[in-house]
Amino acid sequence: MFRIYTKTGDKGGTSLIGGVRVPKSHIRIESYGTVDELNSYIGMVNDMAGNEKISEWLREIQDRLFTVGSVLATDPGKEVKMKLPDLHDTDVTWLEQQIDSMNEVLPEMRSFILPGGNLASSTCHVARCVCRRAERICVAMQEQNEEIPPIVLQYLNRLSDFLFVLSRYISHINNAAEIPWRARV
Image (tube, rainbow, N blue to C red):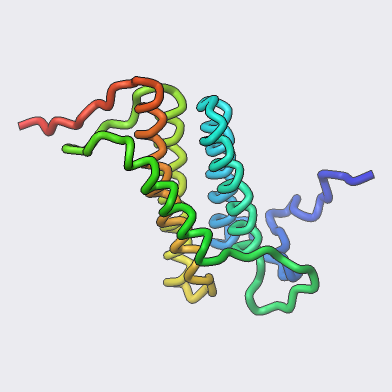
């Protein structure tokens, strides 16, 4: 029987893939924990959207986020015995293609829009914000000389763009009005 608890983290430490022990406050743990949070929000968007095409897209993205998490959870200085999945340039291109296809049916954006419209769209905006936080943490990793493949940053950057457009698309297909931001003067 597989046990979910190991008790090895009871004192605030955990292991990266490769066996190196680090504190749970380590930036690598923060990075893949944030990607995990993002993946959970994307699951919520999927549950709320109720659209087969969107569901296919989001399942693909959730799979890629597990890949991103495994990359971030691996100590780059250690030899890993297991085969880990990896990201490809085509994963970024795929996001761009979906963005372009959604933009073909969306009205031109003439101002900033407030997050909202319906619950799925609003949750998609939350996912976008979490994605941007994951991206910022990965940039901070680089600044701390933690090795991170450039494709991870590219993917997270493009994914946040995708989630923004998806939030608009969800509002559009549900006939929910976009609320333009009007600056107070």
